[in-house]
Image (tube, rainbow, N blue to C red; front, side, top):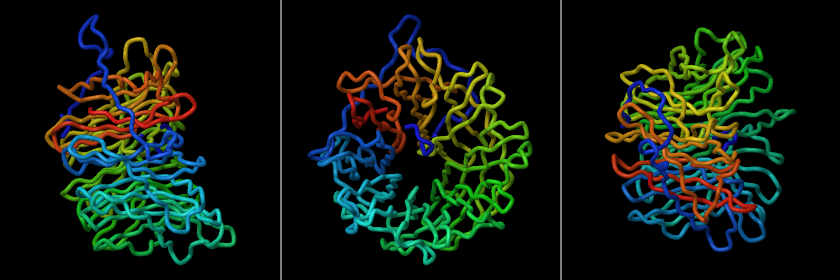
Length: 478
C-alpha cells in the first residue's frame, strides 16, 4: 500500500470521533475478511498489490492485481464476484511479445457495465523492455491483453512505458493514460492518452504541454475519470522551463485533447511543486481533482479544484485537521482516494503529519460546492498513529448511500492493520478488519486498497495482508 501511487455521502462538516467501539466498554467493531483465491500455482499477491476494484452491478464486481505463480513469474489476476459470491479468479495473460516472466503490474480497472471491464498496466517484453498494456473483458472471459501502440516519437529498444489509469464513459468508449520515453538523444519522460472507440483501441497520442517545458519535462498523468462517453479528464504534472513542477489537467472532449495548467492556491511558493494525484467526474461534466503543492512557508499542503471545461480555475487549499504540523507533508496515495456523489458533493482522504510528529490519516468532504475542514481518521483504542505507511487510501460515495473509506493504522503492538470507515450522521465511524488465516498484520505493503458500491446497497472491499513471507489477497463486505 503504500507506495506513492496509493491516497451519496452525507456531505457535511464533522468532528473527531471516539475510539472504535460500539459503546463504553464494548468490544471494538470488526469486519471479517475472506482470503482471495489465486489461480492454480499462485503463491501470493506480488508486492501486496491488489489495488483496484469496480462493481458495475449489485453482486457483480471485478478486482485486479498481480500474483506470483509458477517459477516465481509475476502475472496479472482478476478476481470475479458473481451473484454476491467470489468465483474462480482469471489469469490476465500478458501480450504475445511478453517475456517468460512478464512482471505484469496492474495499475487500474474500469467497469462501465457487467462483462465490459478494462484493465491497464505494464509488462516486460522478451527483449527486457517495459511496455504498456490494456485488456478488455468479454463476458466472463479475459482475452489476452494488448500492447498499447505508443506515439510516433516513442523510443524503441530501452522503452519504459506504462498505463497508469483507465476510465470508461460507456462500454467500448474508454481511455487509458500513462507515460513513455521519447526518442530524443537523451530519452525524456512523456505522457500519452489512448482512446477506445467502438471497442477498438487506437494508437496513443502524445500529450502537448500547455507552456514551455523543461528539457526533460517528466510529464505524467496519474489518473483519469469520465463523465460520459465523450468527456473525460486526466490529471498529473510536468516540469516547466523554469524548473517548476506544474499541475496538469488534460481534458478530452469528443476526441479533442486540451492541456491546461492548474494554478496552485494563492499562498503557494514560487516553486510550488504542484502535482495532481486523483480525479473524479460526475454526469453533468464536472470533474474534481485533488493534489498537493508547496506553500510559501515550504509546507506540503493539499489542494482541490473543479471544472466542467478545459479551463481550470485557480486551485484552493484544503484545510487539514486542527493540530496539523506546520509542514504536514501531505501524501495522497493515488489509488481510489476521491469520489463524488454529484456536483459539489465529494469526499477524499490521505495522510499528514500532526504537530506531535505522528503520521495520521485525514478525511475531507465537500457539500454544495464548499469543502469543509478535514477531520483526523479515527483509530481504535490503544492506537495513536496512522503510521508512516498508513492513512486513508480509498474513498467511495455512492448516490443515495453513505460514504465509505479504507485506510491503515498502527495498532498498540506496532503492526499495521486495515480499517473500514463509514460516514453517518456527520461522523466517520470505523471498524478494524479481521484478517483471514489468523494473520496479525496487513504488513507494510498490504491493506485495504479499494472499496466500491453498486448503488446504495452493500459495498465490497479488496486488499492484501501479510502471511509469513508472502502477501495474500482478501475481500470483504463493507
